[in-house]
Length: 160
Image (cartoon, rainbow, N blue to C red; front, side, top):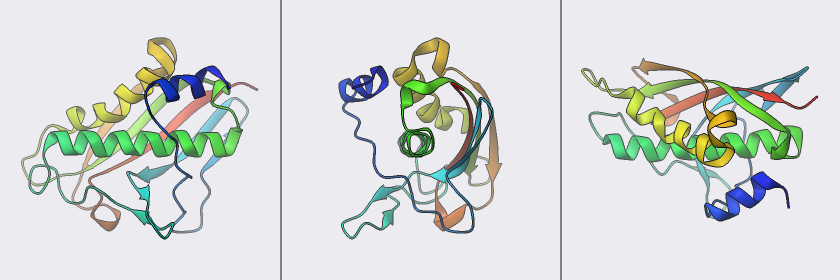
């Protein structure tokens, strides 16, 4: 078992299968040492292996900052599953480079950075400060796919 898999075990995180693509795209594209990971939402596999969304709605209306934080954390867990599916071993991650987060926000909601910390904090917990901290943008959206509260895309540096 690799170091990152061991760390996930310590954090009591079991990676799900990667979310199923809903259109004509793949989980990620590796170009040299850069892995561009597709945007995803905070789904979990359901009883019939369908993707289920445990948190739904707009931040600042149906959902609290804490619920958004937990949704963003699920997004990051899905991203780890997607990275593993593309490169095979999470120990080959050199660092999380950048995250772009999209927040399904009600008018007047201004706490997207607090919501996105759910993903950022998880990456730091898993990879440590040097490898897990990343550049980031938080964008407010009027709507997201299937009323998801958060969608993120990430860029990762991987071993050649």
